[in-house]
Image (cartoon, rainbow over the protein chains, first blue to last red):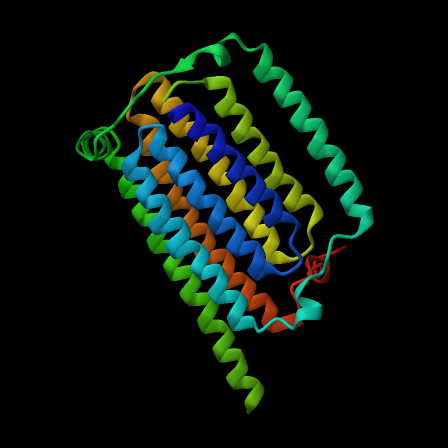
Length: 171
Length: 101
């Protein structure tokens, strides 16, 4: 049952991602990506990470993708200019590189004996997760919190500069 | 959950290279950021799969840290997008070659 579900969710993730990267309209792309992220969250759940699955939905689908939608709406992109589609000059080498890398990575994975190891049922309770996070990786949590603070300061600075510049233009 | 590790790796590799292809082929700034998101999620899938393979919490902890890093990156990147849009009224990446020699 879980195995069938794994392949089903993998297929959903890959198809939604493929649709996402080929859409002309960025709003459609973001919605397809949210779809892919939900399927990925279920995959995380299947692989024994219930807490990470919840965060995938809350942080990725709930916060980050909504931020993307928000910015697209703020910019009020006209439908015509919204989508600078890929030029052929860039598309051909991109697709070639994509296929080449995919095939070589696939070959490496196929030949790797570790790839044949079966992942057995596994479940990490939120309690064990929190214990590992705050005991062994306490320093990393501090560093990430610093980074988030710096990012907030940087975003505030960028937003502020623009407003000041607009006021100068008005004068 | 009975599935070979290789299949998890194949799914995440395909996902990763889809994101890479998106970055290489698209010229819209927002689509490039979406490509980066896809690549980061592919990395997260490998980490969770490895966590299940070795029955350790470390992989899942790394995914949480990855989410923190991504949130910071997206906040800055989208602020930059809004900022750059103020200059050119356009998000085509080819417009932002002001430092070209």
